Length: 467
Image (cartoon, rainbow, N blue to C red; front, side, top):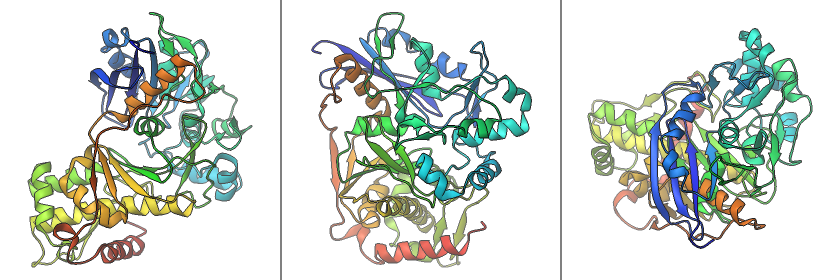
């Protein structure tokens, strides 16, 4: 593959990002990005337009693959036209439909056994039921259902509508354990038959672009990040972006009847148990607004406060929450007194709350057999000095912070290189440069210990299930 170039696309909620890399080692040659409209629904043509702004970069690639936000529902009619704006993963309007589907089709344990996950409002299957109930005319028009990466891959030149097992595992009508769609589930949600894409094999060539580049099958964003990071046994990735995610590569499927762990597949033929929170980096943004600080100042304020934030505890469910499943929740700041009402304590409480929420997520993975050896922090929130300093104590493992990079897009590029090479496994690209963090003595790790902080957080979490 010497001299060949590959392009990876990350089509996220907020933007399209493209990286052009050397196929042999993943070294980034050039990058481009373009924004998406805000909101919880979007016409997919906006994503195609954003991708078109990187056309000159894409045309230099010998192979291309797309990773994109999971769960988004794209309904198409018989002519392949978009029926309505795509409902995105962060649209929670289908929470009642999620509860109804779980009850109708055997309960949480039955769903976990059949699909690896208990569907929540983010899952495609629940959005289909919402459309059937609230927009029956659109449901009747729908002949095919696709995910964001499926739709973009098809527009780029896939020979037929295709998906991969990683992204398909987030629909709620696919079984990671069997590698096939579960008969009848899509119909039960939509009220009629509609065609999902064919599930391509990992690393398969699924077509070519109009300029002759090989097309990889693509995948979901979390699967792309795992591939871009090169996750190994014992590695748990914690992403602090718009959402928070904790995930690990596993050799066997997960099936958590509590619904806390989504038993996804990965992009390589293995599995990717994952826990997702709706609130992550925006917890820091909200705290910055409350304290009148920018992100760097917020971090400094948090590190200036004592562990435990002077008795303040924040429950960071600012815009509803997915884990635990509280779509109507709001945030709670407990323990506020005249003595502890300082900017420093509010900042510290926000950082501790964010990390406690994500540590809960890692604990749920451990309950499904994941044995964390180290934690990799990625995403915009990982740039916070306070987050990096407090994380090892809260997580209870050494923490590795890879240098900021577009890991979802890099994972897509690595998949593109895999399809280009036609090998049984993805190319062995070097691990990204990273800094290492441990609990160590002094500084942010003195005073109230992490166990006490987590216990106080858990007490507030469990005392306020209705909030």
